[in-house]
Amino acid sequence: MNRSVSRTVWTVLMLVSLVAGATAGASLSEFEQALQAVPVSNLGYILSSIELGMTQPGFPADGLLRLIDRVTRRTAPAFEKEAVLLVIAHGLADGLPVEGLVNQALEGLARGVSLQWIEQRLSERLVLLSETRDLLYSKGIFSGSQGSSSAATPAIPTARFNQLLINISETIGDFLEGGGSPFDGYVLYEEVRNRLTMLEGVTLSADDVALVLDRIEPSDLTQVALAAVS
Amino acid sequence: MKDDAFEALLRDTLAADVATSRERLMNLEERVISELADRRPRLRWFQWLAQLLAPTRSGRVGQVVVVGATAAVFLFLGVALSDRLPARDVGARLSLEPVRSADGTQDVLFVLPALDAENVAVVGSFNAWEGTALSDSDGDGIWTASIPLSPGRYEYAFIIDGRWWGQDPLADEYIQSFGEYSSVRYIGRGGDGA
Image (cartoon, rainbow over all chains, first blue to last red):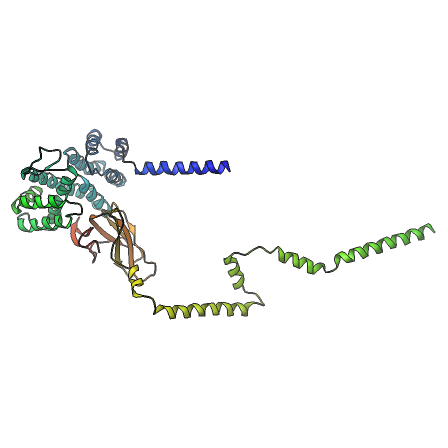
């Protein structure tokens, strides 16, 4: 009887520790271990970027670990694998949200397209993220960690700001990849308006959507799109 | 003289022994059968069924009658009840309405007709582009999977026997991705992924 009770307790403890281990966020040492398996020559830079990204809301730890693992398993020269990871590292180092980049890289790997194509697409999307952030800043829309909050220059909490950033830049990226012209500013504006409106009250705040749509103009989006294709 | 006495004694002893044994051997066969019957192990349902269906010389006709009668009863019940099933029961199984949980997660149904397919899966931003298998349990060529998703925007595509198919008729929109189509669903508003 005692033996069966202790066996049950032991089993429960093992299960609890397994679940706790599985649900805990990935640590920097896990990333280091995964990156060494690629292998990469800029390990220090990529790791420090990841460490910086881990402090940001929405950091896709599991997705990034999965991406490193799949890149490692891909049969390709090591420098091509590292190039994909470096684009994401650049984004993290620049304080940009990389959830979308990680997702697109995973999609490209699943589709079996070349690593160069994936790297090229990620690089374009990284430019779009950066340019869109600059656009929002220029319109007086900042994230919580930037500047002081006022009616003229509202500071949106970082997680909400990043959601705006991701959705605007991805809409522009999808528009261009679908064959849209950067000069069709009005069409592009409608695309952005549709996307933001669809996510209003879902993953985007209605106030944030109204603020962005009030302040940006079609010509602004053309400028962002041109930066990506040039 | 001594020999005669010994033979008589031996004969009497044997006779007494035979008389005692005869009592013990009386109805021995019946008693053995009875005891074995008492010790018969309890059969599980499938053993009972197997025994019932096992071909024997004596029981074949009876078995055929039992199985035939059972099949007839089920056939009759199936035919009689098929017309009386309420339509909503059928609809509920294939409902495209998402089922919401308290944390906002919804069970979103992915449906794809693929008549000659052997394997169908859905990949997307919700499963890190790793296939979630669709099933076609009734073999009618309509493949389905219900996946719990939190509110948001999801890109996805189906993989039919290794071929990507990105134009789901139930999608809210389509985008070009790596030169191919991907479907998009918005969960939690408007289309609700339906």
